[in-house]
Image 1 (cartoon, rainbow, N blue to C red):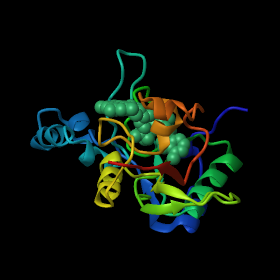
Image 2 (image 1 turned 180 degrees about the vertical axis):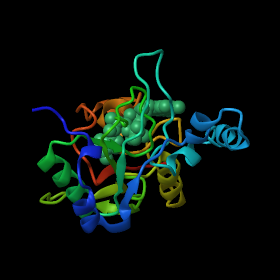
Image 3 (image 1 turned 30 degrees about the horizontal axis):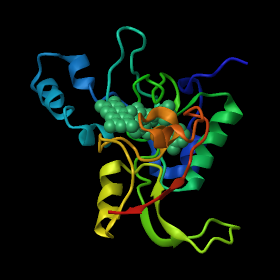
Length: 217
Ligand SMILES: Cc1cc2nc3c(=O)[nH]c(=O)nc-3n(C[C@H](O)[C@H](O)[C@H](O)COP(=O)(O)OP(=O)(O)OC[C@H]3O[C@@H](n4cnc5c(N)ncnc54)[C@H](O)[C@@H]3O)c2cc1C
C-alpha cells in the first residue's frame, strides 16, 4: 500500500489529542530559501553553527544532505512529544492513515533518516528527563541493584554527562556532546562499541527512555 502525504489528510483529529504540541514545521533555513542575500538569512546561517540552536527547531538538522545522495527535508507536521501518550497518538494517527512517520531527537543523523518530506515527525526533543540511580534494579530481577542513569529519548550527552558527573560517576558516551544519548546513538548510529551493542535498525521503535550503567571515576 502506498504512503499518503500528510497534506492530503485532516490533522484536526490529531490536534484534538495532542493540542498545541502539534506543530507546523518549516525549514530552519527558510529565510535563505526566500532570499539568500537578506539579513535574516545571514543571521540564521550564523545561528545554525550552534547544534543546540538547531535542535530547538523541529525543522533543524545537523546536515543538509550528503554528496547528492539525499537532501534533508523537514516533515510537514511534528508532534512535540512530552509523554508516551503523545507518541502513541502520533503513531496511531499515521498508522491508521498510512502516513509516513519520522522520529527525530537531535537531527544528528548522517543519512537523513530523521527527515522525510510530507511525513509526520515524532519530535522527542522535550523528553529530556534524567534520573541518576544509586542502585537500579531491572523490573523482575533479583539483582541487588547497580549504579545507573535513566535517560529520556530527547536528552543530549552533555546533559547526561553533567547529571552523572555531579553524582561522582561516569557514563560512556560519544565525543560530540550534542548527539542524543538514546535514540539514534544507542540503536547503532553511534561510533563507539557501546552503541553497537544494541544492534537494531534506527527508526523502528520510539524508546521513551534508556537505562545506562554508570561507573566510578
Ligand atoms: C557532527 C556529528 C558528530 C557526531 N559525533 C559522534 C560522536 O562523537 N560519537 C558517536 O558515537 N557518534 C557521533 N555521531 C553519530 C551519531 O551518534 C549518530 O548520527 C546518531 O544516529 C545520532 O542520533 P540522534 O538521536 O542524536 O540523531 P537523530 O537524527 O535525531 O536520530 C538518528 C536516527 O535515530 C532515529 N531515532 C532518534 N530517536 C529515536 C527514538 N527515540 N526512537 C527510535 N528512533 C529514533 C532517527 O529516526 C534517525 O533514524 C555524530 C554525528 C554528527 C552529525
